[in-house]
Amino acid sequence: MKIGFIGLGNMGAPMAANLVRAGHEVAGFDPAVPMPEGVSPAPDAAAVAAGAEVVITMLPNGQILRSVAAEIIPAMNAGAVLCDCSTVDVESAVAVARQAQDRGLGALDAPVSGGIGGAAAGTLTFMVGGSDAAFATVGPLFEIMGQKAVHCGDAGAGQAAKICNNMILGATMIATCEAFALADKLGLDRQKMFDVVSTSSGYSWSMNAYCPAPGVGPTSPADNGYKPGFAAELMLKDLRLSQQAAEGVDAATPMGELATRLYAEFVEDGDGRGRDFSAMLPRLAGQGRSRS
Image (cartoon, rainbow, N blue to C red; front, side, top):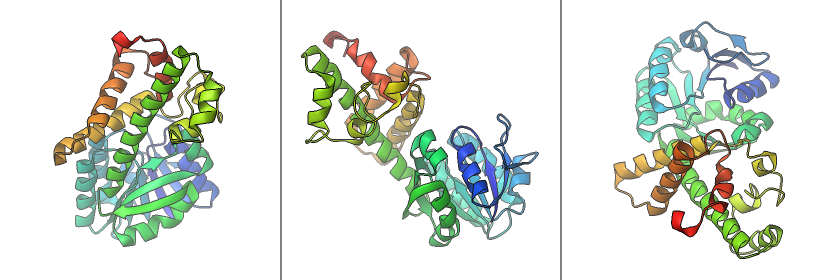
């Protein structure tokens, strides 16, 4: 398949490389980073889109997505599919899908879960919104880049699923870090805490697969000085998207709102920027109740 790929940073580059290794012809554009091996560089985004059967984008936010879409949609051939794998606001995803459909294109919003490690290993999960036909076209590529792709519904449904998932993740990571910080002050050994919680009702992905305590549970960013697998500022971005969406549909999300505030304090007023989102543990462990 002839594929265009726009946005070849920490996530996009390994995703594109996996497509190349699977035998696909991939042209890429990113003004900020070098091309991965095997990806043919293009002079601009429109050149990437010209003649491509599928154009995949991995971009920082909805505003940039809208700008790139305005450039590439006129250059795409009728029947091609624009598959955006960024995490953006639902409104931008729907607007870009409508713009693509008006030009006879397929469109998918397909944000991912799994982080940089999942992108490199080809084990991402894709949450996908868009038509059945577009999903069928891109399905074989999802199988190369990931371990699972869930067709969540019409345009915007993929973004909705992603922000709901990450609102849960942000809140449960904070609760997990709070529990370890409390266990420390109660004199409970962290390993014993993990042994109990990981096999009882406190079980969660944050505890069992991505434990924020160094030396406890499977290897995680906590064991690498909290070098980010999923950066705290990206968690803050996703939490803010969840609250923007909640405001738009008048949904009560008090835990999501609190998690957003706590990550904002961590990233913007603390030392969270450039660290993994699980580095909330040393932050909370260093605080007393009067600061919580």
